[in-house]
Length: 457
Ligand SMILES: Cc1cc2nc3c(=O)[nH]c(=O)nc-3n(C[C@H](O)[C@H](O)[C@H](O)COP(=O)(O)OP(=O)(O)OC[C@H]3O[C@@H](n4cnc5c(N)ncnc54)[C@H](O)[C@@H]3O)c2cc1C
Image (cartoon, rainbow, N blue to C red):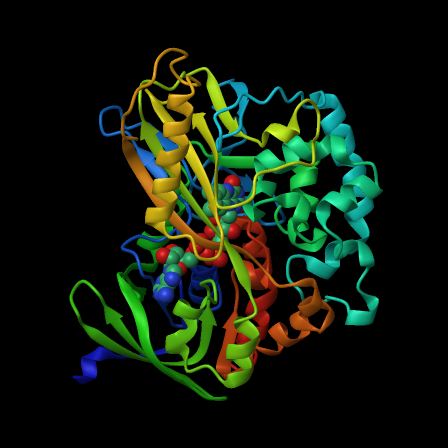
């Protein structure tokens, strides 16, 4: 390599999604540190998926829907002159409960909205004492003997224990479904998917906002402009050497084949630490064994354009056994969670929750199979059998989310081990597996991490 291919930086960040892009801006623009940001795709923003209608220029966010108004979240938009508002433009829809496995209509009667909100307020009271154990990171996670039992029981059991069953339709349909069958997952991991701030948002104690124009991608486009050539796009790490004083990475641009060497004093890993993602990071046996214990959901979203869907409807997948009012019964993943009208022409948002191994093509196949079932059972046309392909206007592989481990691992001190990785071998870790899967909560987590990264720099 020629010398021009060697970059020297204070901090190198891997992953230009919510957690990495935020940290890169703060470290460079506010703490005067030189940075390089390595991003696999050719844009920043990760799971933010903003669809732009070519004809009208209208935007629709089919990944991230809105931002929780936690601590300094709005200030971060202000610095890029992006105006935000809390007005939701979602159309009002009729929810059709259908078992997507069979096509059977499910005569499920959810509790009234008032009953749901009341239960969520009560839920917030119950979970409030545990917030600092889990958010915005696991820094204060209790030693095994001090973990409250309630955090480790299946969430369905937890809800029943405290009489909170009425709150589940909103918990599940907003963000709880990200973990798959929410009733079966240990409470602490469901709380990372629908927890304190979502409960505050649902009960009106915390706002949610979105940019007034340009969709959620507007923020990340502004960050991209700000960071300019400090971002290496279409690039991944192929090799690394990490020591207690520095980090050397070999980075490959998969479009041009160009290799860049980066020598940095600190590394911030802002991607999910899956086997594929961390293999190039010359892990120690302890790092490898710890990270290998994590399991994930895999999330996929897309937009389909098939006029056979009814634009008044939100087709929602529930097992038949949810009828007439069983609020704790959900489908197992992998599954298509819903087809939801977007308000844009004839586009429906599809949401697919996979397990650890579900691939993009399997997710698309699952969506087609669910669609076929709905068609063949007359749920869409109401008339005769038809076949047609789903017309994908957009599809996005969000990949692994909602990292979790078994209850036994939690009791064996998994989170204490996970956090031993922080700072070891000049490497710091952010993102959902180390914190929680909400954009602005990750920013809050980064805020706590940045002073540690800066120590001695
Ligand atoms: C369907 C859906 C809806 C959501 N809705 C909301 C919402 O309304 N509000 C909210 O706050 N949160 C929402 N989330 C969650 C939120 O998007 C995530 O918590 C957040 O994006 C995680 O940030 P991150 O930085 O950890 O990862 P990401 O945002 O995924 O960023 C990771 C980045 O790293 C890149 N990358 C991946 N692998 C590599 C590699 N090997 N090398 C280099 N780069 C790599 C990716 O391309 C990506 O840009 C939603 C998520 C999904 C899937």
